[in-house]
Length: 219
Image (cartoon, rainbow, N blue to C red; front, top):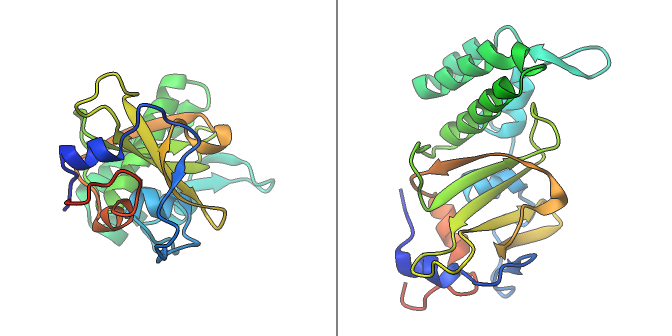
């Protein structure tokens, strides 16, 4: 799977990050109505496949009659195992099940659950989580620990420029804002729940970034 060279990362970077810079407006976005997670996790499309955040969380969260989250559905781990046959994904689902009840009262368990949910989505999107720092990250933000409200892609912003902010966010809002690079913060003021370092990107990410401000002409 593709990665970015230091030259490409340095070109995309900026010492002065702001609200964001749109891609070349003369370029036709192949997925103009894609959701935030479509960009961050898949490099473009949305949809309702089993490996997308809306479907994963729907299968995970148990609601009461009032629509409030009260736990994890009893068959969630089995659903992940049977649907994806991916041991890394099943392991994350098991972590969610093991810690969810305690997370209502214990912040440490909340962190464990949030991280496992994000890693589960990353794995099922075909990306590889890394326990070590990398140049790329998937960022999940929400006002509530048991859900997501925004996803963003983080890129190293200080390659060969240690004076720069260390990280820029690249993100979009479904049907509202196209993909923007050089964002200083995650949009909509949702707290960042977790950032998962990843080892590579999808080709779709590259296809978009090639039309961003600063992309090297000879890349």
